[in-house]
Image 1 (cartoon, one colour):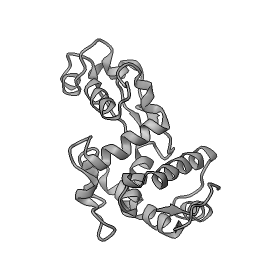
Image 2: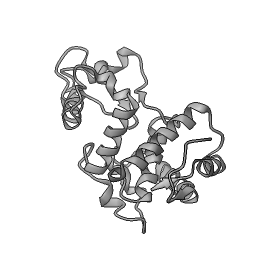
Image 3: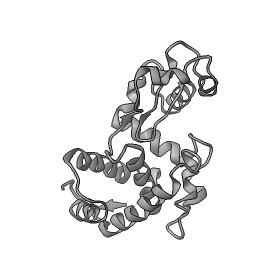
Length: 206
């Protein structure tokens, strides 16, 4: 898949509204990775749902973000708490140290350890690496494609461009939380990508 950037951004603004430069830069980076790493998204509808998920999870910024909250907010995730035990947090301060980060935010020592091992990245020693766009993209795309987050995979809901199940696909990330909102974004994103799809490799612009 390749996308003509001027057409993409014109269609994006028509479907979603104005963009600031940081959003343009973020989208250019994600589209570039999607074009270069063909195995991340096996069809256009998968990429549409991925972009819609990134859009929702990053509060429309399209850059990796950190879970909101003061350090004390994360005490409920700390070692010894019910949630902390579920997340594999074992050390004092793990709740804050391993708070959510990324395009699709991973949370908890166990997830940082497991996904870091899958990517050969030391996310335990340096959890801030989950905010690096290249690593965050690998986490998000790999997690959605291979079921790293909930055990459910994109191919279960979007095996092809025919009849994608955008709403139930939310179970890849987080149950059915805001499933209809993200599905609505995915429908618009699919139209945006289809308008810009081309066989030629085009330069990034906006």
